[in-house]
Length: 137
Image (cartoon, rainbow, N blue to C red; front, side):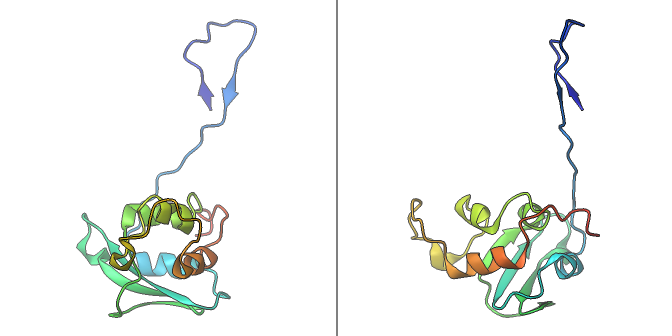
């Protein structure tokens, strides 16, 4: 709960739910495996970058009902801190892509204002539900 700092015991008290959680992914593969929608057809290769835990730096093939470490060329590069909002349902894949958090060199020249979302972004958005999933573990 959040109490406004200007409340001076007057007639009203404004109460706002400002709940939040802090999440840190320690091993991305099992977390992704647990939270993904396994019914989605199509796959995406994510190159996860973690500046604090080098063992989290990996490429993960996600889709077609599985998640696994791969050496395939990545579709996206994403920082582990930006992966958290995707997995917790806080931000969609489309939103992360539009914010520049899902990065791929082949899309460097895509203009900011396009309305079409690339197919791999749509697949990724289908793989991870748009619901709050941080209580799923």
